[in-house]
Image (cartoon, rainbow, N blue to C red):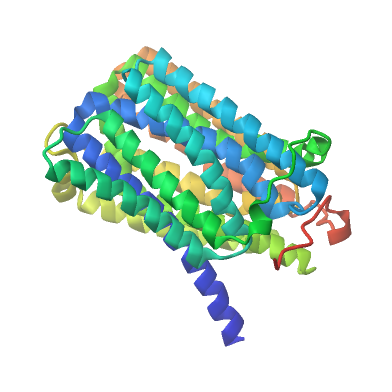
Length: 422
């Protein structure tokens, strides 16, 4: 019993560590942007990262989750996923460039660097998800360490040589980190994992039967955050957006743990499903409760140290307040309440259920936020509350529905992966 428990804890710890490395690198990059770019450029950087996260979530939930849940060695599925990689990478790059140009986020070199970053980021996400599907979290952590290390090393070199930081330099350093980490991942993975067939659409129906609802459901949260950032930028200004984004950094430890839990839970639930071990809603609900308690503890700590840490984050360019931080606490609690149940539903290809519940919550939250910003733009710092409240209700509704849904047997799950141990 002790052996399996140690293995579970090691894998969960590896998943959370991977998220911690990525999130920690992101926090450092944001701190660099705040210190060296100023509030206006930092606001532009925040919108760019929101676009990147939204595009990546759509891509990863379609391609990455399919690699975890479906049989990635089925020739039809594999060819369809290859076509999806090409199509979604192209589409994601177009979307990123469109946002950068329409919102005037950067000059021409900055837009080009952002486009290149998306082109590199999405295939690298596929490689990371292959490591995730194989439960090779140690190698996943190494991959993330290399990306963060290369990116920060380049920026440190620029600082030592006296080169002025610009948004383009930061994006360029991230591109270099992605190139090196992708090369490393291809070395770590067996060639059978990334051997690409000719892209074909014949198996797209089989993939989309699972991935379409999963992608739609997973994209709700990052798209809501993107809409929030763009709306704050439009109604209240980019400097106000910078203050709201800086407050989020105080909750980054809790967000890291929650995201890491999701990366661990989905492949773990799939393994249990394939082994014929039933997953009960109470198992996911227990994980939600643990994450909520941890989030609240982190939130109380963030507010307690706000007076000391706030000026260090902003460099005195603007002020952080407890009310804005509280909004991000509410958002993280919402995330914690729904994520384990959503992972359970995804493992049993019930993503349509999650989408319908979460879409209702997201629609109400965004509507309330947009009305508030239109009527009182000076209340923009309350926007995270609008998109945060409702997560507990969504979690309860998911639990209520999942407990009444007959859990399908392995033979009833379309194209369940038969190579989980590869």
